[in-house]
Length: 293
Image (cartoon, rainbow, N blue to C red; front, side, top):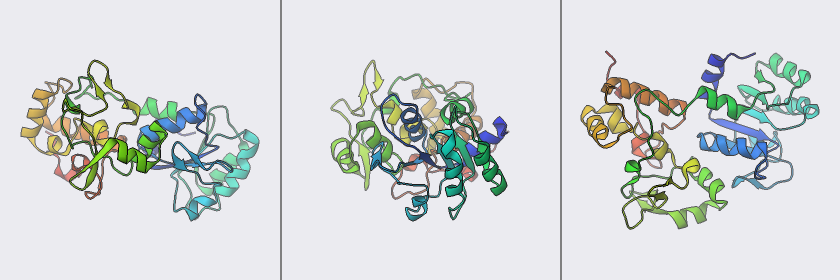
């Protein structure tokens, strides 16, 4: 059994999840969980023997195909009847690199599969929903910031970069191919695709009085606000953001804000590293933060 602190640490480190039995039938448990994991910033590989794509992503047809596709899952999550889990565990054991966790969704238990994984050094979760666990361990509230959905961060043109990890979420949300999403909803600025703005200067998906119309699929830059690089490393930038954004705590010090913000970026896998394709606002190193008192 994994305790919550262990699960939090492992989910915080994990980046790639293979979902066995992936389907995007609206309303089904696997569809709900798959979309949640994409929205939470994970790289998801749907695995299904027949389907060609799920959530706008190309499918692998078996666990064994993951290596051919260059996908090394940190977590293998099963939406399969219990009697099939042991066979899937044997397939996992053939991967060049074993996952951290073999996760059997809510209602799924298989002692043989669990024993095979345990003997191989892979952690096992049985009969628990990965979405429910992730929500419980990583909530959206912090001591230094609470989003009030005011839309102030949605104003301006060219600031919302659509990075490589954002595009699959948007494809899944709209049910469109990547090329069509980019053509319809983005423009190139600074060599990167950014969400288009409307005539009012706000992001085209912001609706006054209603907020973001694509909130579950919004890009990482949107999810990261106000924990942008400038606000984390520069006190003046932080103070200006606090004057403009009503959700930032008036009592928090810059150092408290910066370190909590950095943890938030880490927990939600929002911190980026490739300045060529990702937003500069979410590229920051821990060494750049102000020291805590």
